Length: 280
Image (tube, rainbow, N blue to C red):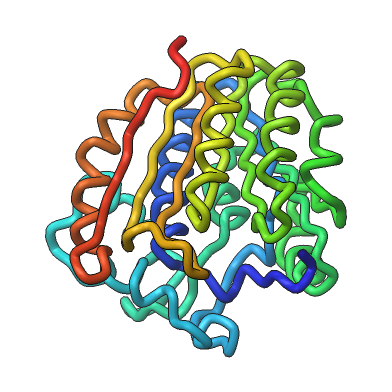
């Protein structure tokens, strides 16, 4: 697990979906004056240089944010996302990509808080260098799945938990569900955004079945595929399972996902899913 580096995948199609949804949730939280709390269980270094050797190895950003950068026909939520990413870049050139900690930080107000967890020994140093001086933020060199539960419920009684492991360890598929259930038991009114990759579809079916049968309510799934599912190595799709989503999120994704599936598809094999896994 500790060989995994977020930089390999920065700005790819999975980040596009994940961060569009993250921005939608954060905008919703910010509509009320009451403060909120966010927890990022797998923060990474916080930002990425797309000219770095890790990012350039497979250039995954070219079939993600790169394809959207200059398009004039973006749907509303994609337009908001791309314009947000542009604030991290100068002169309109795509050279930097913010990770989820940087995105969340931009939405924090004076009384909001953010807790960041990262286990990788190199990435935690980068994370600390960028975020340790902000009093609204606290950085932990720890496993977010194991340790973040103790922060719940937050004193704000409003907030978001972003659960975003690498899934390099296959047991993560079971662990994220158990962690989500424990968190939800402590903080049932919070929003939870669980990212997942599609590498072996049977694992995803198991994950979805667990969500449907373990007592969670108000759960929506949003998935974006760029290739046909295969038994070969590699991610063909990714998705977000959102507990207690903003009431506007599903309608926004109805406009967004078909467009992204068309634009980001490889060899015309784009796909998308929007499903209610559990009703309110």
